[in-house]
Image (cartoon, rainbow, N blue to C red; front, side):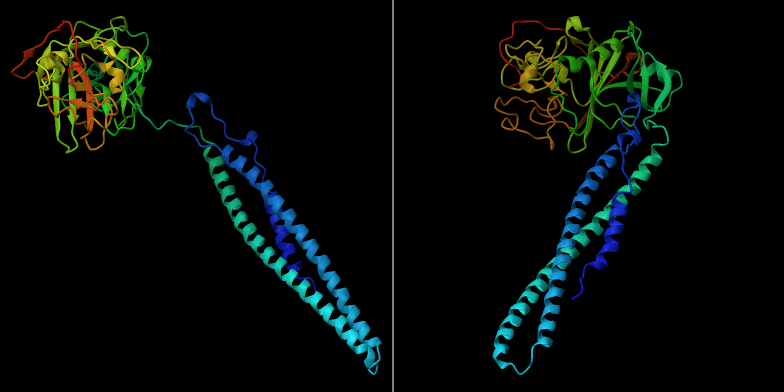
Length: 436
């Protein structure tokens, strides 16, 4: 019987040559200047995988080679046994009937041995076939990885480019940029008069030449607004050129914009519910104080808007003083780790986000994002406070908005409507949380 494994030797040779053809190291990877971020793909991950994968294939091939040696030895023994049978059969006289039973028994034993060895050989052949299929599959994967490596190397020959376009015009706010001729909404650098350095903002510029500076955006719940004092001070989230991300610009930046000149600013709050209904509220002479004053919110009066004046508080019907206890004009900013509200507890810690809290709120646009809008005291957790994105004068406190925008513009650019009302800062002894 001839050994049946010779047909695999060319294939094994091919595998060995393929698996040793490429050794990638970190020395030939595309390593970028850290200042440009990690936008450009590199081959380091592919190289590490190739190195690891190569050693595994080598180990499998060594095992396969040892199996082939074992099969070769078994085949040799089988050939010797058959040769011995043939020689013994020819050398003995056919007439010696008394030795026939012995030879018959010995022949049967030899045949059994042959059958056993043949079964072993067949089993090894099946194993070799399975290993061959695995090697072919792995070789195809290696070829694909090589192709991807070549593609990545070709891409890394070119310098990385940031696809986010930042407009060239600058100014002290977005209206100043619009006055200089900007007509496209997008990302701009501004430098308020008191700012030490410029910073990036999203400017919403309309066809009438109004330049709104956006400082808050909620749209899908992708950003967690449960942040600490420093994060609310510096800002968090991500600015995008098409305004499709959630963010808080930062209390310090809002302060620098709204207090840079004697020219007052207007605040516009835009809301959208889960039925895609939209509304807004405008406030005149909006201002945010400095950090020493805990970024206190003040405004002169509510200009108008179908969303209603939630900043002036709301009568929930729980207590006669609800409206006063939930007004926001003159309130300092609170975060879970910096309590500046009028409540014995910490409204920001209870509601899980920073805001200009009183005792506690009637409008809270940094609250928890509840998909679908409606939520309950049970949804709000063990404490059961109305911690959603709330604007009580438009939708009840157990309804969380789908989208919100807070943006500012010089008051002179805002179309003032009739029916204005004045508002002021109130200060009395407070005992109960007014929004629960």
